[in-house]
Image (cartoon, rainbow over all chains, first blue to last red; front, side, top):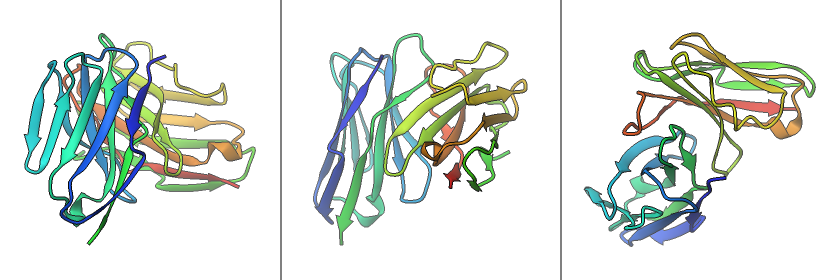
Amino acid sequence: GQQVMQIPQYQHVQEGEDFTTYCNSSTTLSNIQWYKQRPGGHPVFLIQLVKSGEVKKQKRLTFQFGEAKKNSSLHITATQTTDVGTYFCAGRIQGAQKLVFGQGTRLTINP
Amino acid sequence: GAGVSQSPSNKVTEKGKDVELRCDPISGHTALYWYRQSLGQGLEFLIYFQGNSAPDKSGLPSDRFSAERTGESVSTLTIQRTQQEDSAVYLCASSLWGQATGYTFGSGTRLTVV
């Protein structure tokens, strides 16, 4: 079945450093979404990417969708303590409604 | 309502007992999903409902798990004869229908089987 792999599983950075998490799908995706889950909280929708090679930015966050629509990345520039949490990618295959989530990357930050 | 509401927020049950978890989706959201998240893990798909269509039950781990939804409103997830490995946070989400929409998650039900 469809699998979505996400690396790294954990990342610890100093405040102000950059952070990147990568997502790879075993199958071509129609779109990919990213979610953030704060410690003790529930996942919150951040963004959706649909087009091959698409790049979207939200302030210090940059999201990319690969040309083959099988991989994606989230890059955070100059991390802040408010960025702490687990970042999940979630992919949809063509014609499907449900999302398949990656295992998430847990980001911790040393202030 | 303003968000997805789940109840109870916490449930401790004895092994072998049945439990029922409830989800109230956002009004107007025709799609409803159940996921399970074990401690420190990702989200495991369980089931989803879309309007009056047959639900996609492909993620239910065993026949002890079942779910119902009445129209486009409340859903209940039932786990019969609970086992310790059922302990997890059960998350419900809803969305508008279509591939261009994100999920809105509830705060989850933390189930502990002792």
